[in-house]
Image (cartoon, rainbow, N blue to C red):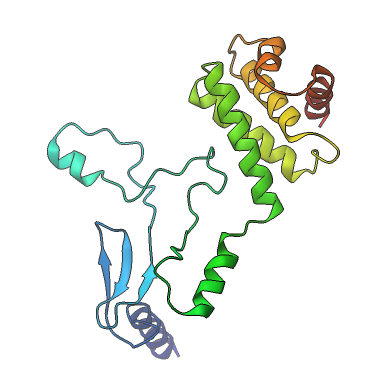
Amino acid sequence: MGGRFISMISDKVKQLNLCPECGGSILFIEAKGETVCGQCGLIINERIVDFARSGKRSYTTQERNSREHTGAPISILLPDMGLSTVIDKRKIINPDLKRAAKWNTRITWQKRNLLIATTELKRISSNLNLPNHVREEAMRLYIEAFKRKLLRGRSINAMVAACLYLACRKKEIPRTLQEILDESSVSSKDVKRSVSTLIRE
């Protein structure tokens, strides 16, 4: 029983190192962060994010080279955390693939909402010269409010202004509600209502 179990595990490990399409050997290209088949070229994983070395400091050239990462950093200030894929439609010849690429560019209302909110948040915070950690905190508050469905019947811009105000208070950045209102395009009544909703919830 034990020997058969061990052989089953070793078979699974062997299968993990084989291409699911052709059965060829799998290679890891560190410069691109991709796992590909050496025989047919199938990309199995792309843009693998390495969180292991994120907090280390580097002093020598060798340490700096060992800390290199693939791709742009993940940020909460990007609507999809910067992990989406965009298909270039210009080079596609097959009409079925063109249709698939067209559907890929259409976004859901949730992503559209977050895109509008992120754009407004970046605009207001850059006008007010707010630090990045305040922007990220405001975006976290907005996403939490969005998940709890607190935006129903409320303006996106009003909720963004409210989240920025509360993030400034939490991070002890001296900005008044009036300063945020001056940069936003919504009424003070809507923003105050959104602030009280966020505090209540």
